[in-house]
Amino acid sequence: MPVELKGSCHCGAVNFKCLSNTPVPYQVSKFIRICRKVGGYMGSVNIMGLTKSLSVEGESNVKSYSPKHSETGEPLTSKRFFCQNCGSMLWLHDPSWDEWIYPFASAIDTPLPKAEKTLAIMRSSCPDYVPVPEGSAVLEKYNDEGIEQWHKSRGVWVD
Image (cartoon, rainbow, N blue to C red):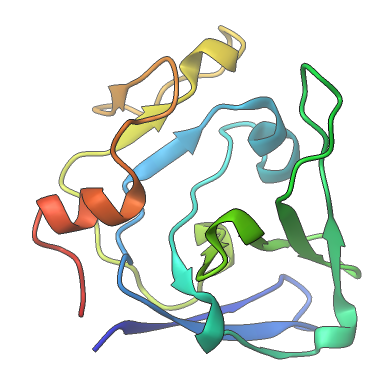
């Protein structure tokens, strides 16, 4: 059975839960510009949850942001959801992968399993002054192996 993830914002106005087959936060840094802007200096760490399992308390406090492509200015299909009161990033959803939501690991209150080896991606879009977490493998672009494939190939996918 998938793992139940419980999460919340900083001020407590929003609590959410969802089921996840992929609970290991192995991509420790997404250095892409938007992830650094919304997730902080080191970027963001997200995992996957099943969209249909998402339940939210305090939904009236949840707002969304629809970004534009940093190079073309074209609207992206993804939306980032956050608390309107404290600004905590909660999850991302993209209808291109409608069955998944991508909770920000920073919003998850459930203890998460530790990855044996972590991965820092999109280093090519990151300023030199931002450090890579010690011991992380580094990729200049996105990983060819998605979150689902990563978990399955390492035997940590949870059915």
